[in-house]
Length: 253
Image 1 (cartoon, rainbow, N blue to C red):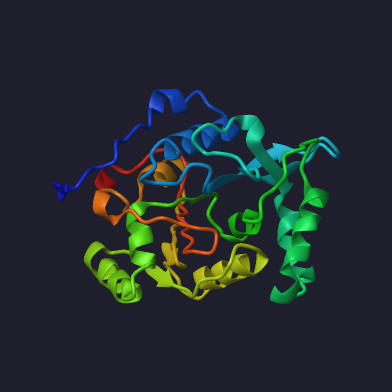
Image 2 (image 1 turned 120 degrees about the vertical axis):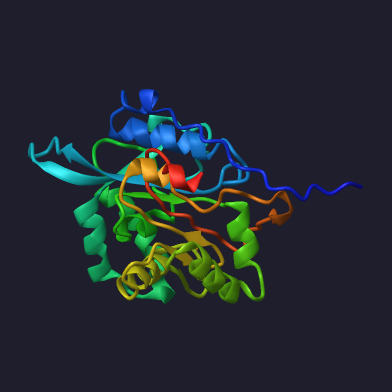
């Protein structure tokens, strides 16, 4: 059986003419649909995306920072605006003060409905805090083939360091932790302890950037080698890819 060995680049589907007409939530939806349209980037039904947006609070008329994040059980490739959960950022961040520790981290999930912004029935997923506690205004958790291969490799950390040196990145390696509030705390510390960090490997890949267009475009998962695809089970390696939302940089194509 013939084996394809050539590199296959991802197609840049971002259309600035389309994006220019969209508001913040619709840009998040647009970005999510593009990222979810290629299984080399994320699995069907997997991954989640978010944006931190300024909105007027109907309760007091003041502008608040609101986390829009893919709701539990949604699919990036087909998600609509109505599929995102919305939470008060200040209240989400304040939950760190009452976090009882990793042994009781599941208790935090029941608090998310208490900090919902607006009359939004969409349930926030267990990955919500990792989006909130990372400083980037736009965050994507995806499943790029290259990151799966790296994270699942016995010499993954060594290869990550080689990658950093060759391509000028500052990825940081952290031990695997299941999704939840503890993972959010680990990622927060990982970014704080490593100035200039532009990604975290955690049995997966995290990258964070400043502008939504860079979030869609500026990622080292292109080119992608077809032979590097791995499968992921609930108990297997998890990958995170955090970046910015609107369009990719030309030097990343």
